[in-house]
Length: 267
Ligand SMILES: [Zn+2]
Image (cartoon, rainbow, N blue to C red; front, side, top):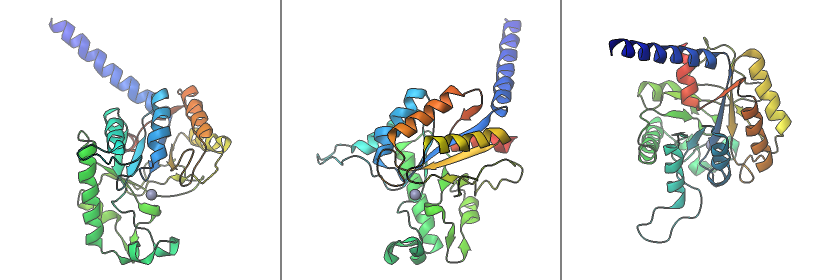
């Protein structure tokens, strides 16, 4: 009996190290989607499910498919996000009202320029409470800066929300050159990502992944609409890119932002 237990322990330890080694040998790909868009519920999640990938969804106030007009009936989007979380998709914090700088075209009255740090902290706390209802099993949240902006006036609020323990890691912006190759110097509260622009092609998405593979690094895709809505890429492009990643699973570890960051920071 004792030997059986030791044997089992050995198998478990070996499996752990082998899987850790296998992950390390691969380039890390994080698919992240912003703003809780309806096309993410209708298109992205079914496509991810079909290949078994887990991704990260940075949500603000719950939008999504049509709200129920029956009293006491849960809106479809709430059910959709709850189910996604139960299936292992990561729900993360993107503030409540997604305030951006006026200079990026935001109406002055709702822009971040009118905010105090306290007001933003309240929003992030409130969004954490909403996420806890949708996704009760996750205790720590990742964060993405609305419009990739981390300033209120001249104050960078990054370290403030980290010190308050509101979020564990944060994703910042970037472009198609924003590949992480040096984990030692990575700022875990400003992890760069490629803000994928409207009409980006399959070839461009693959080229980014291949650059990540070449340096054995980490690449974070910042996606929005798929087959509709803002910064959209086509449904076919998205499906084909997932198929490419699936076909090259020996090269890529596709995982959620928090899981990737937990792994990277433990190395
Ligand atoms: Zn956003």
